[in-house]
Length: 221
Image (cartoon, rainbow, N blue to C red; front, side):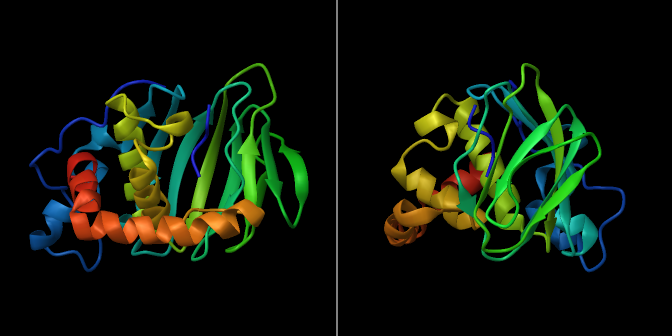
């Protein structure tokens, strides 16, 4: 889950196709390729509310679904809510500064430069920055999850449009349900156990009403 604590927009999708298509991707699929594969400038997205950015270094489409990687930042004092992913692992690697990670398996720890930790599917975790400077870290998802990629574009796009909702996560409860369902990102603990059925139900409403399709089309392309 992205940090709860830098500015700009995802921009509009370019029409020019990539020079080389990934294995198994046909020219007819170009309109649904990730934004950064259609326009390199769209690999980097910003959240002006949280003052963070994410740069997609490898979309899942570029690794034939095996993995996806992105670099992200977290501002001083930033922390995201404890959550879990059911269908993919997440490996964090510190690229700049000391990144804080909590997982159920390892407890709370700080990653030194170049150090990594992997969170397994279903394992509750969160990350934080208790230092005085911005930190930069890599996130690697195995296998890749295009829904997660879409969820970040939606969340950061809503923040760009100043419709961020609670702590910059999404524009409304319905949008939060879209974000969680798309990205396979679920709140942990007792509160999570009570909220997840509600979020899944609301996502069904968002899909039936066309809200999810509208958000993806607007911010993913």
